[in-house]
Length: 230
Image (cartoon, rainbow, N blue to C red):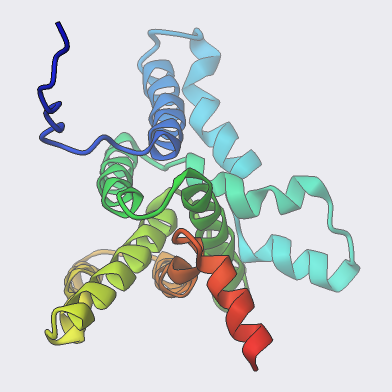
């Protein structure tokens, strides 16, 4: 007997696999560092794993200045524009950044397909580091997934901007989330030393907003058509 029942939709849309993989890698690396710092794995030398990873994979403007001055674009320096997103200074920082990334990635992933999400993550991560390297003092360091998260916020803001335009509402409402986060960051900056990472975060947000229409399905085709019509 044929079953003609309509299949029920899942109450919650699943998170895009690309976002899940990135999240697992980030939280997995942090898990190794945290377990190593408590001595549960790796023995005595594991206590220094986090510091060693920060030295090997974090980004600082000094690397960009050196490459521009010498023309030595060593892959060990270039990879830092991307790898910094996977190492965090503390467990708490990693947890907050990864959870925010997963949540924002879920929302954006409902409109953007896997390859577009991967491109969005890479472009905002690298772009945030590049702007940070050009503006921040040479002694500052860029660590963690917050720029990538702000890149997702930029893409999410674009989606909301389009939505509010479609329903005839004030499009400025699309920027409420970034406004709240920046206000909180400013408030924390009044009481704590927060560093210059906000430069990379703001840049990643702007890049995410700008790239979002391209990574949406058919985005590059629409861009090519516009260029051909000029």
